[in-house]
Amino acid sequence: MDRYPPIAEHGLVGDLQTAALISSQGVLDWFASPRFDSPSVFAALLDHDRGGYCRLGPDLSGDVTCRQLYYPDTAVLVTRFMSPDGVGEVIDWMLPHDTGLATDRHTVVRLARTVRGTVRFEFECSPRFDYGRADHEARVDGGDAEFRGPDLTVHLRSTFPLQQQGKDVVGAVTLNAGEQAGLVLTTCAAGGEAPQQPTVDSLTEQMWKSVNFWQLWVRQSNYRGRWTDMVHRSAITLKLLTYAPSGGLVAAATMGLPEQVGGERNWDYRFTWIRDASLSVRALLDLGFTDEALAFTGWLGNRLRERLDMPGERLQIMYRVDGDPKLSEEILEHFEGYRGSYPVRAGNAAMDQLQLDIYGEALYALAEARRFGVQPGYHGWQAAAQTLDWLADNWDRPDEGIWETRGGRQDFTFSRVMTWVAFDRGLRLAEDFARPADIPRWRDTRDAVLKQIMERGWSEKEQALVQHYGSDTLDASLLVIPRVGLLAPRDPVWLSTLDAMDRKLVSDSLVYRYDPAASPDGLRGSEGTFSLCSFLYVDALARAGRLRQARYAFEKMLTYANHVGLFAEEIGPSGEQLGNFPQAFTHLSLIMAATTLDEALDRAYRH
Image (cartoon, rainbow, N blue to C red; front, side, top):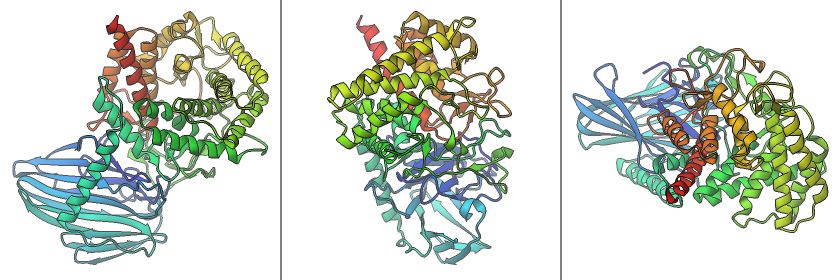
């Protein structure tokens, strides 16, 4: 067992309320319960010794090759172990909670089987409650085990015998070709009822139910383009990162994974960002997954209504998955961090930042829902209209910007771009649905924002729109400009900006967010290329008619996906994945790039 496997050496399983990471060596090394944003039960990925893990697989000290794949079009993960003595598999999944009701009961199922020869599977279960801070009691009786923490209980039911080892549990089972064994790991509130004792037949039946659930869901997709496998894998990943009871989409399943190994850029991404989730609406609608897209617009509408007639900002940049705005940041001082990447942060202090772009993303999401006949109710529209009335008085302020820098507020151009989007989409909604609105004021504000962007966001030196007013620093967030319609995809101003990004931010088709040396962000260290930006770059190239360049860049980006098609936040200098994993922003931008590129290629071939 590697102390710290590469971030990319994992697959994701989930039940639509929380998720777990399982390495290609069969180690469950990240799992929080009962929700994405709950304290961890297993967190060996952040501290091998204190975090806790659950391993099922053969002894890897010999000549064993590990491979991992998803059962086609599902979130059922298969980890294969091949050796001269035999070939074994561990199949992992979580039972989906698709009713939309929140529950404290979550189950990971692990099924071992031998497909050739003989394989001896070893099992270790070492939970560590509350990020490894809380003590627990363990009890074992045959194939049953129980771990009791202060607020949470882990029940373990196995088809093979288990033994207690201190406060952990171990076991082993030897399987010949065609034989299977398995276990059910269930977390619930302290004192919760244990699950029934499983049989191999009952576990197999549950596996096929999970397979059917995911394959039936994927069949809703209307995508018929060139990259079906990758687009559908990205859609499944977005679904896995969605908290079904509220419709909120978390930015990633994990916390604390570094943007630079050994550095301090280690954030908690298990929350719902207005920006990320709003952009997912368009990606999901493009594929035909309307239920998920509309569930989030409902979540967003609730956030807007909460602030009606209250002073201060109308939206926070992020929330907990149920809409709770409180997510203060703490440092887990006892965790060493992934390969020494310290500090490990739980919660996110950026919740208090001012990021004015979120209003544009919110209105963008509501406007996209309009394409499917979703008409805002009166009270929902009232919340949106009051937000725009407020924004008309408050848009022209420095803020922290999209990248949540901690180096002070600036007049970020991207924030102004999305402010323009807020008023542009608000005007469209008001006119399309004949809703009451201060249309003259909104139109005047929209036009004033555009004029300010073009006059103050332009750098004569770079011949480009830049990160913030008064600077010459480029910023890849502006790659959304042609997508949102601020400028036409072949407008000379935009093409000049795109050329400048090619010179300064693009490295072998991979795109950096910005240059921290040229624009200090208040943090030490560097970071890799940002995968979201690399896919936005493909989108912008395709819209500009640079199809050969766009397609080559897209195909190269796909080679950086991990072995099961997942992406983290960034790509490092040697092609390694960095940051929290998997990241929703990356996968939704992959979908956006694929659909844009498909449409552009189809048009070109028709002509």
